[in-house]
Length: 409
Ligand SMILES: Cc1ncc(COP(=O)(O)O)c(C=O)c1O
Image (cartoon, rainbow, N blue to C red; front, side):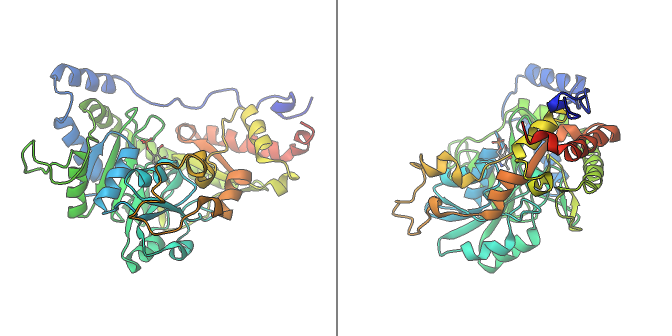
């Protein structure tokens, strides 16, 4: 029997972390009122939510849609991505960032991330630009804003649109401005795990009037606000949100800012504590990141400091200590969807003259982060007290001190 819980010792923590979602009478009333109103779609609650969420994200235009994947498709169309266009995306993200490009007829081109932020590396974007490139998607992974200065500068230099995939970053702030409306358009998800949650849901935001109007049209069957019901200006689709989603989101927006501040304080405190543990690296400090929304708290485990112990064993040991954690993404270009079942990717389309081959893609920083380093904690774990955060750090330290016990497992 060892000191670690996984080798039979006592757990660092037996209490659970705060539950998610957080809800009560406000949400119950909002849903019942919507039901009784008889207006379940295309009503005032959606309008009110769009106004409130746009204002919260410092964006003049906000279009509510059914989920974050739909938001990406609408944003890509509104930014003029057409069949055969290449769109630069990071491979360290949820599949929707790249699959949405395919679903509007485009080709995702994977460019590596910075290992110490897990966000798209602006220094590597330029080399991937071809005649076919139309746009760049910068994902704010885990809620930490990507380097928008660098990415938007490359985009502007080459006449490309830049979309912020802000699906994980409600309330995140880059240089004093909320993310989403800083580049050309931004997308949000309100899926069940997200920091703002309606089970499912999404939004496109923009500070560009033309993009905002096009996004509205694409999300609503190609209609225009001043037009008739049967008047379709572009080939859009029905990406609309329901009144139930909007009612829940309006209710959930009330505690959003306070929750975001709690996550920020606890996340920053955890960074301070983890920086004291040999073999653990936290994400790079950057003054331009005014606020990380901490949808995920991601830290880097350095196997060499743990005697070469694989990340999988570290995660098992930390989980056994009562700290739920996971390994996160695999590089997207290695997913079967891109390596084998590629029937929807229009490589052979007459529109496309490029030569992307995912078998040849190599993004070393992403591969290292995925295989050996990244460890994820979820946002709800940062909604509690300083003592919760101290438990996380204590457990990590305990695994570090006793890592020799894990070798024989
Ligand atoms: C980075 C990122 N992009 C896009 C999405 C897609 O959002 P949804 O699940 O609401 O379709 C998600 C959500 O999981 C995400 O994390």
